[in-house]
Length: 401
Image 1 (tube, helix red, strand yellow):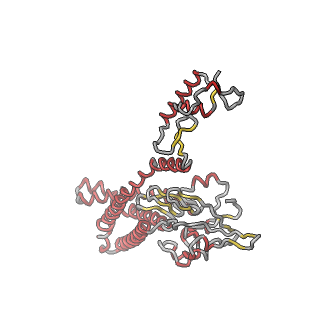
Image 2 (image 1 turned 180 degrees about the horizontal axis):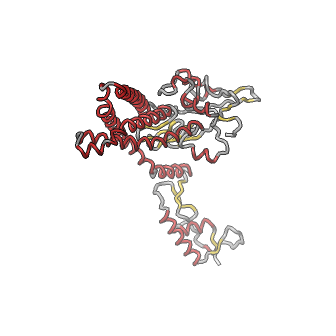
Image 3 (image 1 turned 60 degrees about the vertical axis):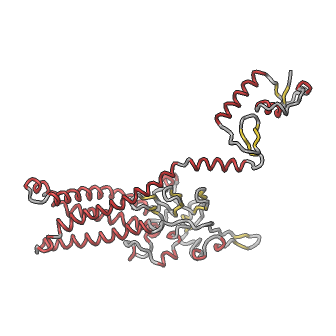
């Protein structure tokens, strides 16, 4: 009976016989567990298995590679497993389906044109056709028309202001080579790692302060696409191809991500758009009721009838859909949760960022009541509230993070 060592068996698997000893029979026959009987049927099965493995996992050619253990795996002896790991990650990255999401930016530009078109149709129906001519009739009709026209223009101005702030304000990006703030006292040396060693000096004055029983504890991640650290509540956007601070979602209607710096603008845009569509629906309701009679009797031009009908249907549809979004984001603001964090919050017994409705509201809208309903922040809030900077967030002291 002929016995083969592991090395000899591996060489025979790979079809290399030049390195085998000339006289296999000269080998001793030790009963060691690392020696196996050279059964011809076993060798055939192993040969077939090795061929199947090679077809499933073809080797990438190159110098310095040797077959390992007869399984057809090509191992880079000179560079080790790190290059193989990098190649595997590169393959997975090349097959990333979320790269196709960048095409949503093109759709977003059409959405901007759609928003402008809806505003134009609504303005023509409400102001030009329905209530503008009634301003000069006198009596209560003129007073009502003046009130509708005034409120319409006020909401429209706030709506457009908030909308363009969402579009053009950066949602917040992670600083290059950002590192978390760490403040740990070394009892043996008597020194501590200071804030300035990790973050920019302008943020050091307000970070890592504890007040009212609240603590901040970093939850740090790493983005393999941006090759940078990720602050708490930060997520990578596959459309913008970058990490966004306290990312809520990517909105195709504004061609931008909704993050820590423009979330307030987004909420005000939702609110004012909802109020505007409700006003337009109520203002056009009497005109819509008369639509069928005017169409039958030909009392009005077909163009005015079409614009009135289209404006009423669009505003009613948007009012109903926006109502759901307003209710949803109101609940998210009062619980200090983003859209992405909803699933994570369900798994937690107590949400660590829930500081109470008042504190949660101020983390989005600021502490200045005069600016709550304007897409602006006071300089004092921007300097003293780390949550508005997006790199550090207060958490409940009774929750382990």
